[in-house]
Length: 265
Image (cartoon, rainbow, N blue to C red; front, side, top):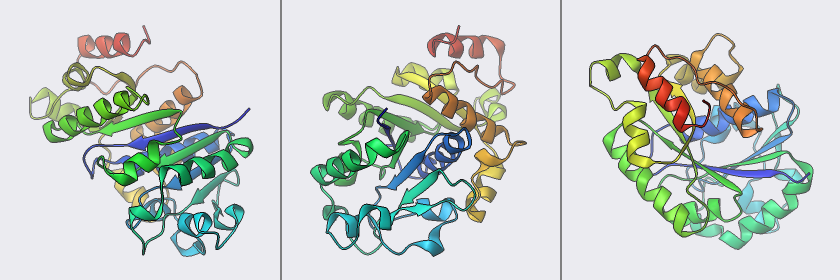
């Protein structure tokens, strides 16, 4: 069965999109799926750092597209998960070095050999975003529960629908139930009301996410981390499993509504 191609994107930068890509890749690979990640953020690559593979890069996606190497030569195998691979972005080129048709050709070559292809899109709605969604079967939009991030996510969702790639699925990242209770942060309920898209996961704020990213060890591999569990649950949902949402100690009525909106009840 050919790979499912999933692009992870966001409207606003800094909401945890690349971290989400790395953690979903690790979680899917740990479950036995064969996964390849593509860093689509040409000129600003970071996925290699979060996966702990930055010192092993020889070739990148632009080298493949411009014929300086074969596709397999650019693929870096993860140190701990032998069924997880990375195709890094070029650091010294800009996003115009890759076109949507280039991405389509690349993905066509990858589909037969993998279960999942995860594309880390640049934030925003410019050329890099168009490249990243070109071959996508599904798009996941990552947002924080902040007004500016949600507004930008709404813009991205509108473009996905216009491009027949949407409306996409939503990950709400870095939710802090304590701040929500104090009315100092948008609740998941508020975000869902504003965006009205399928909810695929809620990831709680967790300092271990930053620690893991800095160490090149995504938190999805940490059995004690609540954020790691959230990413593992999202990975299961991507595989078609029905998994309940984590209870983040918020109010029962809110979480009951989230379950209903997500089709889990």
